[in-house]
Amino acid sequence: MSLLSVIAPCRNERAHILAFCESVARQALPPGWRMEVLVADGESDDGTRELLDEWCARNTQNVRFQRVDNPGRIVSTGLNRCIAQARGEVIARLDIHSEYAPDYLAQCIAALQASGADNVGGPWRAEGRTPMQRAVAAAFQSRWVAGGARSRDLGFEGEVDTVYLGCWPRATFERFGCFDEHLVRNQDDEHNLRIRRAGGRIWQSQRIRSTYFPRARLAQVLRQYAQYGYWKPFVIAKHGQAAALRHLVPAAFVLALAAAAGLALVWSAAPLAALLLAYGLLLALAIAGMRGVGPGIAARAVAVIAAYHLGYGWGSLRGWWDWWRHRAPQPRWGALTR
Image 1 (spheres, rainbow, N blue to C red):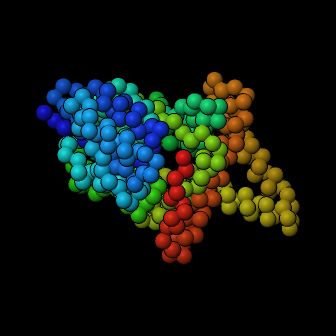
Image 2 (cartoon, rainbow, N blue to C red):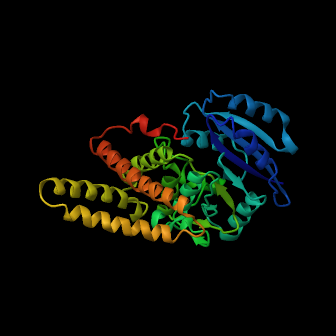
C-alpha cells in the first residue's frame, strides 16, 4: 500500500477550513493508495484551530488528518513543517481557497508516474462568484496579463517553468531541498526555479483540474501583486537570474511611467501620451480576448489589470531598493491580503 501525503498551509480560515477538509476526504485515490492530510496552522486566532482539531479527531473515512503547528505563520515555514512530518512517498500541496476535481490527487499521481518529472501540477484556472471576483479571474486568465505564462494556459500540457500548487516524489525534496523560509511570497516559484537549474523537470497536465477563487476586492488584488513583485527580486538575486522575462516587465513599465510623467512636467507630455496610448492598446487587446465577459465585468477588469501591473511593478522596485541597500525583506510586505 502506497501513501500520499497532502499538505496545506492555513491561517485564519474559519469560513473555509471545514469545506476544504470535506473536499479532500472525498478525493478518489488509485487502487493501492491511501492518504494522510497535514494542515499547517499559522497560529490562527479566529477559531480555525479549534474547528480543525475537531475535524482531525473524527479520522474521517479512514483518512488521517493532522494539525501541524506553524509558529512562523507564513506559507514556506508551514509547508516545510508538513514535509518534515509527512510519511508518504508522494507529497501533494493543496490550497484552502481552491476547489478540486474528485480525481485531482489521482491525476497527480498518474502524471508523476507517466512523466517521471520532479514536480507536476495542473493549469492555474481562476473563477469568480461576485462581479469583481469574476473580473479578477478574467484578468488572471488573460495571456496579455500573465505575460504568456504556460501555467495559466488551460490547454497546455508539457514541461513548464512552474505549476500551480505542485505534487512531488519525496525524492525531490531530498535532492533539491525544501522551501526557502526567507520568502513570504514566491517561495513556490523559487523552488521550481531551483529544481530546473539543477536539471530537474516540471510537468503540467490538463487532467489535473482545480479552480482557484481569487481576491474579491480591488485593494486586496493591488496589495497581493505588490507583495508578489516585492519578493521577486530576492528570488532573482538568490539565483542570479530571473525565472522569466515577464517578471521584469512591470517594474520597467512603472519606471517608464514615472520618467514620462517627469518629462511631462519639465519638457513635453508627448512621451507620457505615447506610453498611455500603448498601454491603452494593451488593455483593449486584453479585454477583447476575454470571452463571455459583459460590459460591467470588462470595465472592472480594466482596473484589475492596472492593479496587477502597477502593483507588481511598484512592489518589484521596492524590493530591488531594499536588496540594493542590503536591507532584510520588510515584514509589512508579507501581511495577509485576504
